[in-house]
Length: 282
Length: 282
Image (cartoon, rainbow over all chains, first blue to last red; front, side, top):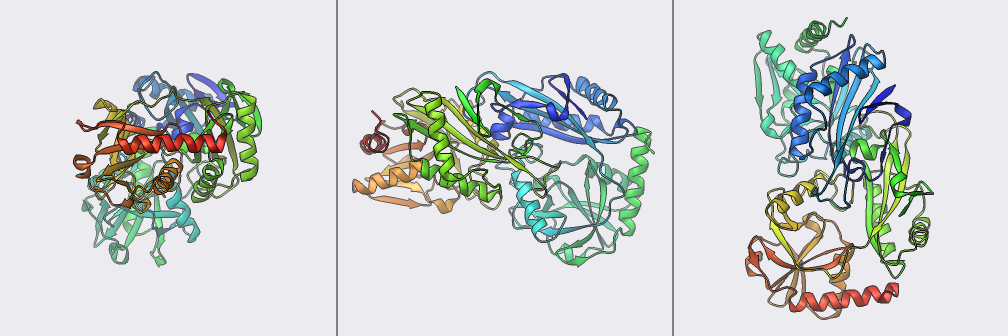
């Protein structure tokens, strides 16, 4: 695959950054991950708006406009002649003086990576509630997608140790927050439930799409503080992210679910219809 | 300066890593920073023991032994023919499969960077208590020094905005934790006070040296939970890190201190004597 690194196409294996890049030194970078379907990026505008917010939270100035970035995403898709792919846009603070201060001159590193799409369809996955708690909003802005990803990495490793595929993470209060790299939803008594953004989670683009689709389908929706007791009571569980869309959950902490459940299956169908409408996919 | 990258010396400006390196993607790396004085690394063993602990917390296997790393530190000092320098040892997880999982094959990146020593002497600095709270132990192991440094970067930026040089950070309970890149000490009624390691702070090598020196000098020492009210009551404040040693604090949040105070001056003297003894510096 060819990556676009600071405006130039390079073979992925040849794409390198200086070790003085703050992305490498400190994870001092904003990024966003999205999918291409039928040769078009899905919801690029929403992803790039979030990238702008993430970069602003870190006070990293984007080296190019949103319009240029959107055009660059399409250039990467076209250059690699891919129909379905995963795209990762990253803007690091770049190189500058030694030490953690952001005063001084930095020239951001701007990278679009392109990766093979995951195989479909998504089979039901197993979640494990982990001890690693989501980093609170007082410590890092939760709405920013940054390269400080160890909180998720350690949570996922703990879930993998327990034989699960994804980690269910609680916030500092003990309420359900999100998964290591997905948002989480439950269905109970016909209502679709998901933690509210106020609980300090990432504002997932797929999460937002699912909420739209549920409202269109007249499924009652509730964004709220969710206690772990819900795991025992829910009829269905699903997770969402921009790489896999909707993924049914077959088990949490050993409790099993019939997956995909009725609501999950309906939302999944509607989601792929939405993708097809907006990208002429399928 | 020449850096040692995966066992080879390269000019700092030429040292590069693949963009697929997890250090760049996720800040998925452990590091430690130390100083060389008189051509010898100071307390290399303690720093490398901490690096081993940091890497273990991230489940990154060090590609070389502690003994080899210590020898490599000396090789970097000798290669650059520096007497005083700052050394940064970093081990990232390296490149592997896409996504946050640590399952699969990774070949760690091992880097020793060498930087000019800061100018001396350390003039009194200004601290500012910031809104950004130290990431809690439940979210990331506080004893691990990792390349997930945004919590410190954002705290420091907030302090800089207020015209201060360093950020005084509180923990999630509101107790004093540490600074963005230093440990903090207070002197009140002749006692040296510092937050205990249980409050979720980094176990600073210089912090540990200062506690030794204070005990040797029969200065009463207390490691405890410290309330922000102490700022108004303290007679002296100082911060420590392995780049600058002891730095007197001249002001916190607008409250000024005579700096360096009597205890700070004594500990500073003793610290440089210790450095001289162990490195034949000076």
